[in-house]
Amino acid sequence: MLAVHCNASALSLHCLRRTPTSATFPQPLSSSAASTRRALLVSSIATPSFSTLNLILSAPSKSAIITDFFDLPDSGGVKALDLRAGTGPTPVDGDQVAIHYYGRLAAKQGWRFDSTYDHKDSTGEPMPFIFILGSGKVIAGIESALRSMKVGGTRRVIIPPSQGYQNTSQEPIPPNFFDRQRLFTTIFNPTRLANGEGSTLGTLIFDIELLSVRH
Image (cartoon, rainbow, N blue to C red):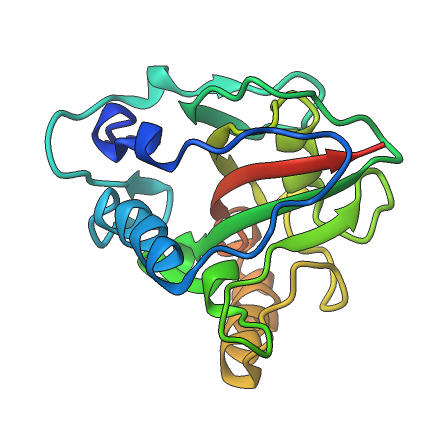
């Protein structure tokens, strides 16, 4: 059984409130604001411990069980927990969306393999991940999560292997070579796949914040 311990309220994400817009993408955060935002999200999630399908995400205070998550309709088994409800528009296929995310791999004890806060522009500011929803270039689990989110919302999703990486060209791709190599050699390990471990190797956990939508 998949047990998950987390605390949505402890995130204090109201401190990160932004004004949603469907016309423009947000301006880069100042270094201090970006650092504060990142620190809040990181501090809200203690280093997780995973063991095959027994997944535990711990948080600073109260905990919640897996029933706090819900199955996303028509998602192929993606489970979601809304950490903060958005108030802006909901994207549809064909929209350009901008998100921030933390990506973790269950098979590596919750190892964080990528984060948009580590992607910096020429001024040192974190860059959001921008793509066209429904293009098929991004793993299906992320697209499923976004289709029922509103701008300004933050959602944690547990993505089964069937809705995660199916090949090494699907986005988001960690820009660091060693992180990318570790991620894909774990998910597509031929020996472990042959031993029937495919149902656990590619399980992903993403915390996703929908920043903006452009129709």
